[in-house]
Image (cartoon, rainbow, N blue to C red; front, side):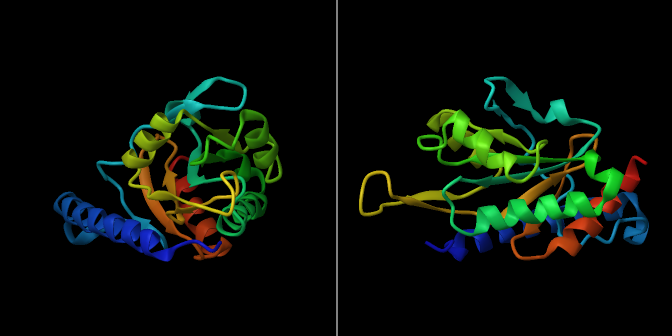
Length: 209
């Protein structure tokens, strides 16, 4: 089933509002907005959401954003049986990491499952390995998953299938990007393309070069 696009637009609008608020705040510190990076994604620097993330990796270790400080982090919410958006997004991230050469090692991809009932630790580990050995998959209990999605303003909804296990998931299409200090900076729209993501990651990497 193709992704329902209404939730993605809803998330984008929320991110856009946060971006406008951020611009106003930054303009007070930097007259005329001078010195601000020309990001191609939605700039949500200073947003009061997407600030905390604490879930388990497939090896049972609790991981948080603090574990990845020093790297630019790209967080995407999806599920392993997603037919299109999820694999396309992860493949694009893998492509971008390769295109960055040595700097690709300074970019950390995180895949958060919204379907922990089917995405076992073993399945999640195998899935993320398809896109690179350093992509980290995270999962939690249903309650933890809901709370984390709420923190990130990520929408997801179970769509019943012909059987109890053949359901699909509608979900927000887009990724959150954090700088090397662990601060949320960008919301990237699904379908923006590898080059746009690469350009934005280069700007963030340059901040700590």
